[in-house]
Length: 554
Image (tube, rainbow, N blue to C red; front, side):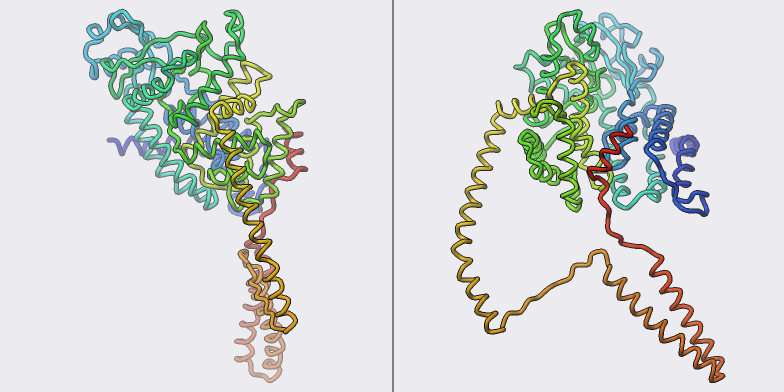
């Protein structure tokens, strides 16, 4: 039965994506079976991204979640797709209460006995679950119930995705095919974790404990006695939606202070605690009347290991210091930038990004613009993005957007720099730099002592004509091999033509025919060696001129 459902679902998915596939086929060959490649403009990508967005919404919960994950993977999709999919909202109409009641009673028992009161009108409907309000021992609670029958639909969709992955991989390069395979594994893991409300309760409780001494951050408490793997009962904490600027002003709330609280909370989660709330869109953040920020929905959450934490610190410190080389080093060590990318070109990209983001004051620049430029470059230079780091990068941009909504003059980097200084990270970076500088100075002094004797020895060998120089030619693109092949084929062709003519003149038709066939084969090979272009050197995709053109187009 499950297999039959997957086959039926496969037909629906293929039908939904067929227009996009047809467009991609025409990109490769204008008339599908023949013709040259078609130039794809940025406007065409945006139109296709919107079509993809509509298809994902039509296909339902699993594909909505897939779209949200794709919006965090600039190594898989072009920037136009990432930007469009970033607006994908996880909001679908709630299921009937009677269906949700079945889940509640299977896991917790009779609703009327377990809860003092239960409102059967859902206050929130998401792709995987829906939220109701109720009362437990007189306390108002929020009850999150997994959407009925969602497990079977998700498993069928995951099977469809596994079937379609080899087909999709045929239209992308080897590097992105690898990224797609990782993405499929990551998505299956993520969506199963998000359906596991037991895991969400553990993450929520851990993060709540990390902010126990911070009154400016509120994380709801879990009612373990009324929770299971399909039901999560939490403390109900009302608040004003963080993007409702007019209501915040009406209540006299300091929006700049709220923005700073949000950023500092995420910096602590990512840099200090290593566990973070990974879905900070405005629907999951609220503000109490006292200015405290309330976090909802911990289904999408992640962990960061110590190595990545240290590199994120290095990145922020480098941005604060405007140290381009240190920024590139941090990105390469984190795995967000290919070590093979043109470093000079990337330095120009980062320099322009910082200049564009600076504004009137030299201390004012936006991390979102910096990360945005890096994301564009990630797509031009394909790489393998660690899944948790992709979430971290996405969280950084979304949080910055939320903060700018609260305060249009909010300076993300200044707040981050102050936080790092308060926690001692910047001083540690300065101390480490001083130690490295001292080591380099010591090595330089030692080299200055060793160089004169070695130089004198080398000059003596030159004088005795006993100096040999060995040079190795690096030819990773195979240019020399192709040149040698062309030379050999050219000599063979030049020799075989008169030989064929001579045999024909001597009336040895059989030998002349064989030699003629050989000559033709050599000629075709020589012609194709000039027509076929392989291993050409990569042209940098980002220069000052085309970056400026991109911005003018936008």
